[in-house]
Length: 173
Length: 173
DNA sequence: CAGTATTTTGAACGACGTTCAATATGTGCT
DNA sequence: AGCACATATTGAACGTCGTTCAAAATACTG
Image 1 (cartoon, chains in turn brown, blue, purple, red):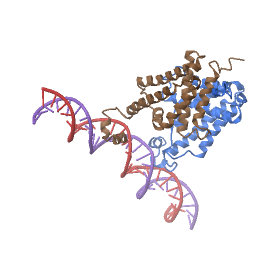
Image 2 (cartoon, chains in turn purple, blue, yellow, brown):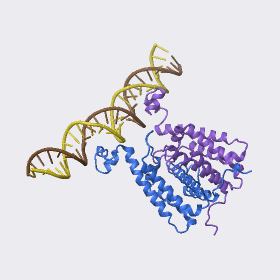
Image 3 (tube, chains in turn purple, green, brown, cyan):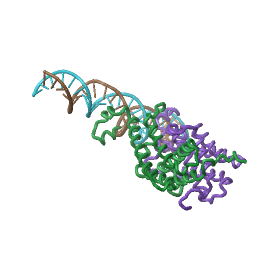
């Protein structure tokens, strides 16, 4: 709070007329970052070559992380105090991001049933998220050789290649 | 530091005879947690039914996260100040965890070349990590319906099912 | 210009990580 | 036992942080 206040040339107390506390300020900032990330992914999804969309989305995601590592880190590393939940518009923003990816990948995931498709996209998004957090915190580099982006492509491409009925090998027999 | 000191019945200053600062204390704690997580995964990997090992590992991972959410959160959310890197034994602990998973999954990933197998395991681990962080921070629940564990199984099973040559669809044609 | 509403201030509070001289405790020796 | 020395522990103090709030400054209105 003190650093933000100094940056904008105000006394610390002034910020409390705009935000309840530091958490509220960060959540508002994260809302903007979420919108920017969503827009970056949407722009990448306009590729005409639908087969290239999965890798285009992965590249757009990592481009964003590399372009704005601090904003991205705050967006996903910040945690509200116990018991306080994120505002509704935050959920809407996240849902819009996922929906955009689902729509963009629809051509290459037409074999999936609707519900499973969305679940799969969420899983892939979480996978990219995990790779990025480990990379940003310096823990991925301890065990991975290639760039984080490469692992991102691996996750997304193989999950899509596996198709909707993959897994559950115990069902076979 | 003050809370730890109070818990063990010492003055704050005493802790500085054992650790340089709070970061060093947390890194030491994280070393223990990493060992515990590694042991839990190793125990799950002893399953005789090799086909069930992937799901057993996923379950063990999420069991650990649910059993020790705070320790797990500190292990992976803590970040050293800029420029300071993790000690060597930390890297070794992480590498041991990955190596254990690679060894446990060897029977079901025998088709993979060695290097690719390890990379794939790292990617799956990062995927589980991403699911867990989003779940713990309350952000996964905003867009996912099922339990986090389900997404973990999805990622691991489909990546294994996809096989070593999946992805890179642009290579075909 | 007077009076009211709004914005901004900066001192103050409690909590935090950290430092360090002072103090307490333990250990080995005669 | 007492003494000298090493080690462990303390607690006050410092600077920083988020946060509060009465006071001061500014803006607006009739």
